[in-house]
Figure (cartoon, rainbow, N blue to C red):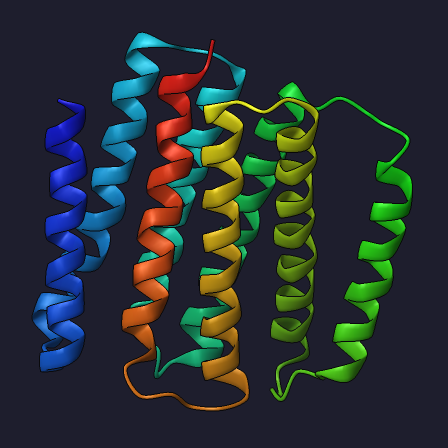
Length: 219
């Protein structure tokens, strides 16, 4: 069953890329949610065999990301749809962050790392001001950037403190997730790139898949 679901994710991702190349709106509207629906089904499959705090939250995060994907389908309505999409992805990352705290162990080496993180975040915000008119959207994006990077940092700490295939999948998934959002934000707010959506989805879909697969590796 797991192989079938992974094949479905790959197939719908192929359709998504094809819709971008062909600029086929109908195919785009069909393939986009089906990718995330397949990932949710993968989560539910894992949840059926291994229920738990971490697994419930990962599944909930995947469901919230589906809503975010749907709102972000029409990129022309930046202020309306993108605003709602970011809100759902904020909730997604909050679910993931909470899930990852289940295996978190505090170590003193993390203190300077967290201080460095806060310094770097403030520096990036000052160096690259958001070029959008909506103050609400600016705040949303800053909150989202803060949460996703903090979630990435937490997944990295978990991997360093206890190396396992589960923690490796989570960190790799969060790393790809963050890269996809950096590319998305760069294209929408700073500089336009041709066919950027292809690269965003080639990062985002595997990211969500890896995080979903971590459910199967939970104890």
